[in-house]
Length: 270
Image: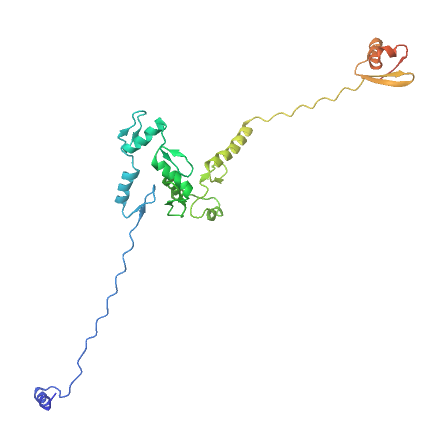
């Protein structure tokens, strides 16, 4: 800036020395709004799918799991099906035709879907996974049955039983009589027979003790058959016998041919 310009500022009342230019500091930035929460996923209780709204879940359940329109009928038994291809597969159950064969074991099937499910047993692939516990299954029906264990509320009478089960109750079959849990329905039914047998024994009247047999009667007469001073037989009777009967018993014991004339009887009455 020249001296002339500095001089002119003396007439205008402005300072002749340059001043620093005022700077405006930027306003503090506003905080960013938090990200929106993830949408709530509503799981379908019948399959692994989830939906963001209740209306979509309801529409899915009506379309997939609702009662289908079975317009196609079997001409032999009258059974209805949703699709025509299902009728064709069903007709093979009447004709016995099994055109789909497994190349691994040679087993034949009436439909391609049944063959595909069977081939999973050879490959070991389990495409259906439970989202709650991670367990896998070869068929979707098995997964649906398994997921009912997670949805079923289970109460435990004893606290140590709860951590054993983990994420879900591994023993879902409950005995209402004694409170035991079983993993399979067959085990529960076999166990319930024990309670049924116990109830049967309780309802039956107690058996009377068997009567004690009376002691054998004491002998009333003892007959000693001797031959030449040697005792050959001892006969004990509960009733006194006549002399003729006594001789017959001794002769039978000694032999009639050898006892004649040599038989001596000693009788003692008690």
